Length: 125
Image (cartoon, rainbow, N blue to C red):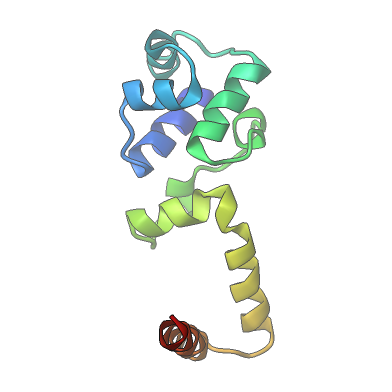
């Protein structure tokens, strides 16, 4: 996938407009437009980092040439679930659920544990 393709897909998943991304990244909207229109295939690492930070992803997603986009591997997920998976802050939650699965805890059991914790938390407030 090209930089253009990766950025288009991430913006679609996050329902971001060019002007919103530009503002969040601290770059010009014209630069975002040039990237999305394929007129600017090469951008500085600093700019890529700003865009990655604005999208809450690791900059390596843009740098690695053979990266598969979320739309290609996450086809069974809803748009909201794709946003969660692509958010770099979700990594600990994904790791925890993976560890639970390795220990034989089912999704239903984990869900019940979370519900129990939420109930306990409510009673403590």
